[in-house]
Length: 221
Image 1 (cartoon, one colour):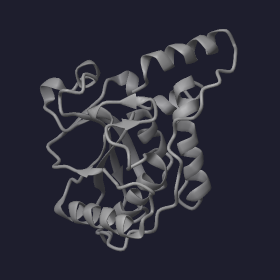
Image 2: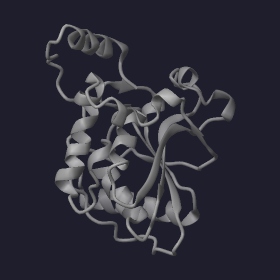
Image 3: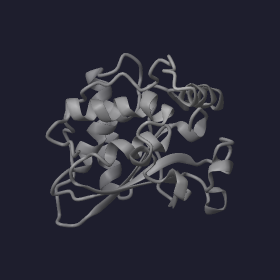
């Protein structure tokens, strides 16, 4: 997730009790429009998988969204044999750090989860990087778990592109879902367990604050 040099500097500052002057690497948030095409609620829970840089921040945001029942950090895009932090960090496994979101469509739709993703979770115009993190494992990608999700995801990216919501082209990919592999225990709920960890303060807390500010009706404290 974090650039080792950045983390080392931040941790040093924390150890000596100083405030480390590191500029925020969180994406500049926008307020994307509502999805023109969405999936109607059918009374069943659904699962969606999002990759948008370090999974700490992605999980942190979705954990604060009303209607989200659980958010789990993990790896998607590669095989089970390489679904570990050490291996995925090489950028050669095909995995992306991702978050599996279980949600109640009666409270929050897949289209609204996409809207939050493109508004505050990640900068969809950056290829293989987010903030201080670089490599294919930090790409912005959507892994639809159903044909309906795939249709909505592609339609929404087209909608945002046509509306010129961003100054640069969207590079977020829609990739086949071939399995999700939960990350190691130390990566689960990292944002909630370590709210003052320097990397979280600099890169991820601004995303949750943007969620609260821009989507107050969807925010869960």
